[in-house]
Length: 176
Image 1 (tube, rainbow, N blue to C red):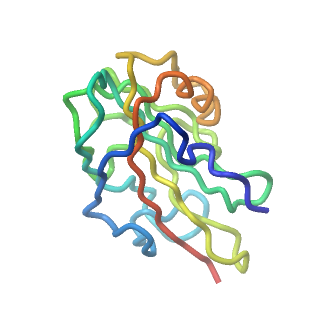
Image 2 (cartoon, one colour):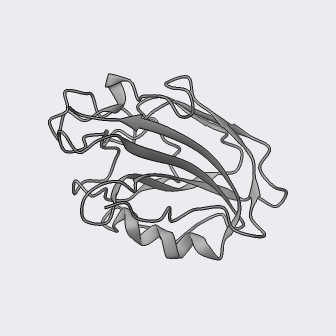
């Protein structure tokens, strides 16, 4: 069951640019971005991200990764909030559980695998191709109320009224 994209283009929300050294928009995710924890043979390494052109007034960023094609209403792979406005890239692996590659202000929320950090792609075998929506949100506040025990899904409502712009990439992955 495909669910709607929670961050689909909305009126009044600007777009800005994002790229990744890990994969190209619309392409298959490499093995590093698939899950070892969930049995897809990967490394659960968050992708490298670069972004630019955020709207004026941006005070911080949040990053989310969501699979709208997952059974049961979608699957949250990653959410991190409170990235300072002067940060415009994240290294591959920034979503590690130890937070070592994130700015000290950043907070990772629990993904749907149950831990704070990035969990890679792992759709059910034979379920067909899944889309992985990576979104950088430019926010009008330095801090969003977020804690490591909060679910990644809970960030959706917190970002709704704070978002000035979004940059997007989509990765694909299928387990046969």
